[in-house]
Length: 227
Image 1 (cartoon, rainbow, N blue to C red):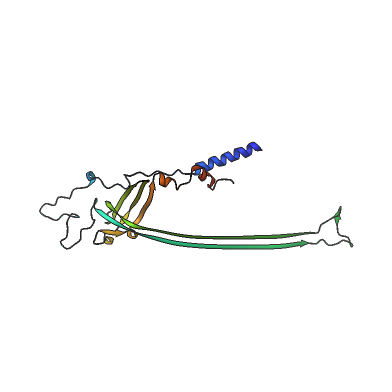
Image 2 (image 1 turned 180 degrees about the vertical axis):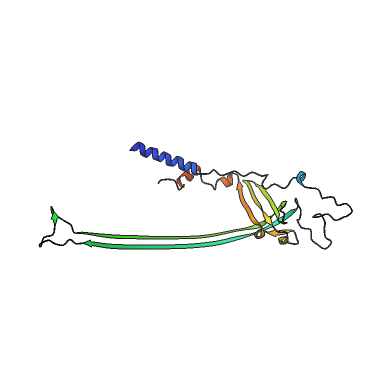
């Protein structure tokens, strides 16, 4: 029995370890957020007999905005979310059953002072309550580049910014899709207008590692931990 308990504990420990995903370290110059290389930029098409070049012209009375692959655009972060949720459930059920045996000629059938009279009583109760309140906000700005132009004219943007501090590095990344109509005259776009946005904000280094749990604490806090 002791061996079975030890083996079961080891299997639970191994399953908890296998369920934990190690934190992926982040490094600069990720190809998924890097600007488009100059070699991949297509030159303007040749139009013989005309000075107009599609997507390379500048209007006399228009603002210079990002319209081509490789152009720079500034994203203004205006993210602010707040959510709350509350749930409460209660259930109660009780039942009582009595079974009386009729007497036969004035005598209740039985055996060795045991009769067939029986009664059951059941009482079940359940109550549960949960509350959640979360609030997140992010403000600032970052300049990114246009990585691709979809056939419908939607611009795909991506970029990152790294800050090297005394106790480590901090970074912010964003990628997503924007409409040319949402670009303001000063060549900016709010982050709320970025579709399919992927925004990451974090850090790496000794200061960032001090806020993370060790592998032992992660095992103890794993939902697969049996105790």
